[in-house]
Length: 484
Image 1 (cartoon, rainbow, N blue to C red):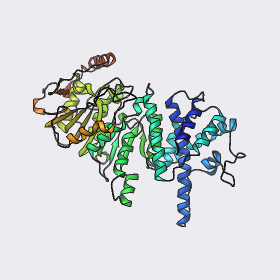
Image 2: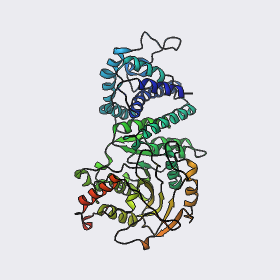
Image 3: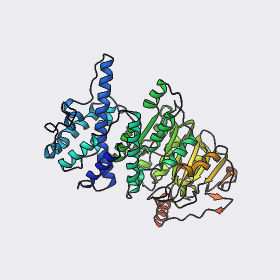
Image 4: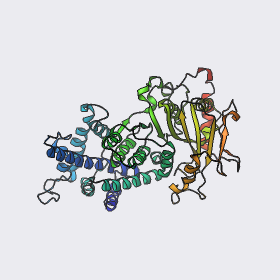
C-alpha cells in the first residue's frame, strides 16, 4: 500500500543535491515521517478527549502542526495549494522557524522520558539538507499519503522503514554500524526469552533493531492484558545512542513498531562511570551489538576497571555491570576477543567467566554483517554465578553470505533447537572451564569435529591489535578494581 510512496520519497531525495548517500535519505525521510506521525498522534488523542469530555492540550502550537504548514486541506480534504508553503518560502519556514521551535522543546520538557524532550533532541541534532523548496514540497506530498492509524498500516510502514535501514547498512562507509541482521537478533531473543515485566536494555542501540524485535516478540504473546500493553509501552525497553543520526532513526523505528514515546537517551554510554551504577539502574535482559574497532580517549577509559581503548571491551564491562543478578545478556563481539593476548582482553575474559555464567558462544560465519570485514561471535551469559561449562555452536549456512544471500531465520533454527539442551553435534560441543588455560583464559573456537578454526584476519585488525598491545602492556592486573 505504501511502497510506492516510499519509492517516490527516495526518488525525490536522489535528485536533491544536499542528499548524497543512503544515510542522508534515511535521515531526511525520518524527520518528515516523525512530524507526520506526531500530527496523527495528536489528532487521535484530541478525538479521544472529545469523546471522553476532556480537553486535549496539543504539544505543538497551531502554526507548527503538519496539518497547518505541510499539508493544509481544503473543504474537500484535498491539499489547499493557496495555504501550502513551497519554494523559498517553505525552506525559510523550515530552517528559520520550524526547526528552532522544535529544538526548544528540549529546554521546556518535563523530563527526558517525555515525547516533548525527544522532539527537542531530534531537531537539535539534525538539519534540513533539502535545499530546494519545490523538492521538499514534492516529498511532503508523498509523506502525507502515509497513514499511521491501524496496526496493519504501522506494520507495513515499519517493514518499509526496516528495509530502508537495511539498505543504509549495506551501502558501505559507516552505515553498517546501524544494522544488525534481523534473523540473528531474533535468534538471540529466542535464547534470552525476555518476559513481560522485565526491563530490556541496549546501551549501543543504533537503529534500535534489538529493542524493536524484542517488542515484536513480547507483543505476539497471547492474551495480553491492558496492563501488559501499558508495561510494554512505558516500562520495558530502554536504549542509549551516541550518534545523532542513529538516535533519530531509533526513535522513528520504535514509533513505527508501536512505542509512542521511546525510552532512548541521546548520550555517550561510555562516559558514565561504572562506580556510579546503582541497583535501580540495572536490567533483566541486555541485547546488543556494540561498535568495535573504535578507540576511546583516556578520560573515558577512566570510567572502567579494565582500562582499554577498545570500544567493544568497554561496552562489555558496562553490560556486565548493568545486569541484575540473574539477568541475561546476548552480546555480539569480534571473535578475536576470545583469544586476544593483550592485558585488557585476558582480564575481561577472566571477569566474564568468574562473574557470569557464559553458557553459550555462537560463532558466526564471515559475511554475517554486510560490509564488515570481521568475524563475530555472540556471547550469551547470565550474571551471578561463575561459568562451569561453555557450549559452542559453529553456524554454517552451507553457502557464502553476501548481499544477495544474507543470513535468514532458517539458518539459525538448528542453533536455537540444540541450544535448549546444549546438545553436541558436528557443529556444537561443550568446553569445561577447568580445562581452560588459567593464564590466557583462551576461549577460541576449536571444533573437535572439524579441527581448530582457521581465522583469516585482515591486516588492519592485526595492526590494531599490535597498537593495543603496545598501549596496554603497562597495565597491571593488580590495579583492576572490582566491577561487581
